[in-house]
Image 1 (tube, rainbow, N blue to C red):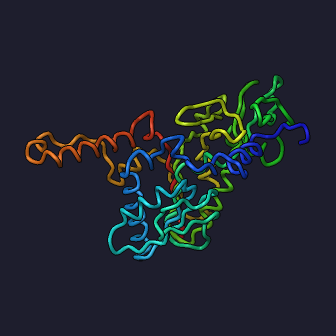
Image 2: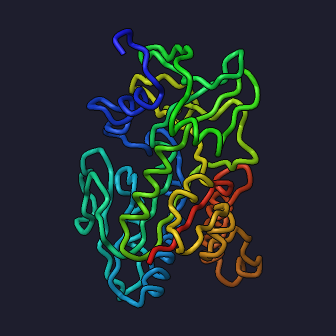
Image 3: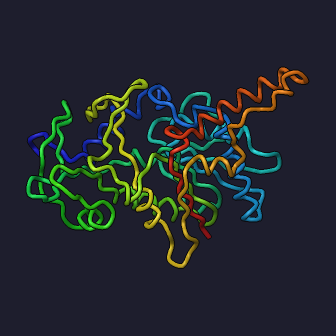
Length: 323
C-alpha cells in the first residue's frame, strides 16, 4: 500500500521480526516483560517433568525438546538443567534472533522447528506474537480490516473482511455491534496445526493469555509493552505488539481427524498436575531445619506467583497428544 497504511498483521510482522524488529534487540524479551520462565526455575522444572512423562509415554529414554519462541534460550537451558538423569535430550531452541552468547552448547539454535522428531513441542507465549489482523464493525455493522500507520499508530478502517477471514470470524468471534473489534486468529490456527504436524509422536503444548468463544472481549486485546510497562501499541519496532489467543480455535485446527482430543486448561491446574503448589511449608520445619524452611518458603512464594488467580495462573494451556 503506497500511502503507508497497513493491515495490523503486516505491520506487526515487520515491527517484531523485521531487520530492526523488536525481537531482534539484544536485551531480548526478558528486558521488557516477565514471563513464567523468568518468574521462577520451578516452571522449567515442571516442563522437565512433562518432558520425562512424554518420554515414558513413548517408551524411550531419548527424546526431543522443541522450545518454540525461545527468547534467549532461558527455558531450554532450565529444562536441560532439571532433566532427570538417564534421559537423553536433543534440544532445539527456535527463534528469529541470533543465538545468544554463553548458551548451553547442547542446544541447537534454529529459525524453524525441526520436522519429524518425537518428543515435546513447548510454546510459551509464542502464539500471542504470531501477527494477526485486527477488524472492527463499521457504523452499519460491516466487519472491516483496521489499517494502521506504522510510524505513529494512527488507525482507519479499510476493506470489508472476506474469504477465509470472514469464515473464521463468523465461527469463532462474531462481531455483535458497531464499534466491536476482534483479532482474526486464522494465522495462529495454521501455525499451531503446523506445530502439531511437525511431531512424529509426542506432545505439543501452547501456553498463552487466552480467551474462549463464549467470553471474547468486545473491543479486542491489542496491546503494546516496553520495559515492563503497557504502552500504546505502535508498530514501529519500539515495543512488543501482542494480542491474546483464541486457544479454542487453535485446538480445533490442531486436532487430527480421529486422533486424541486436545485439552484446554488453565496454568494453575496444569502446573498443579506437575507438582507445582503454592502451599506454605509447615511451621515446625522452621525450628528443626531453618535453612530448609526458608528454601521451602521461597519456593512456595514462587509457586504462588506461577499459579496466581488474576496473574500467571490464568494463562491457558493447550495440550495435543500426537501419534
